[in-house]
Image 1 (spheres, rainbow, N blue to C red):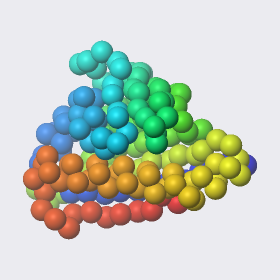
Image 2 (cartoon, rainbow, N blue to C red):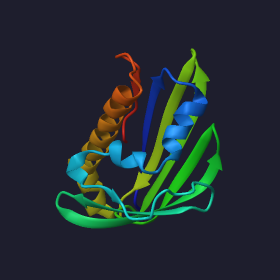
Image 3 (cartoon, one colour):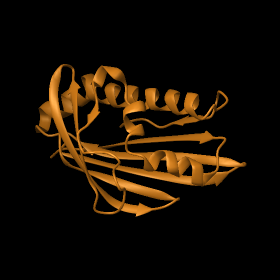
Length: 163
């Protein structure tokens, strides 16, 4: 049996929930939030009309291995939340919940990622040796980019583990 892992991250930004959600509603901004070492590109023609049922196709390179990835927006609830689910890609499961809550004159952004790897024991070993660290690095980079884009003061991160 393949275990499921969960990564939880929270970050506060000094922008309204409407402005914050608008930024995340533009799928093109995902490239700006993804580390360059992944060579991430959106393949779906833009602009993308984000809504429940929207499919988005990407390509990336994971440690030099080219990967195509397709996600489906499974829930769209502006300006409070949305969810995407991997339909095809490197994971057995990738379900990302994005939550936006007004807080202290700004917005708290919460990311909850539930994921699982294929390959049974080999997947568990790979997670322990590198995947967990890589997923955390991707979200560390995302935090730093959001902090820079939204001009957020330091110290606004609550880190959860990918375990």
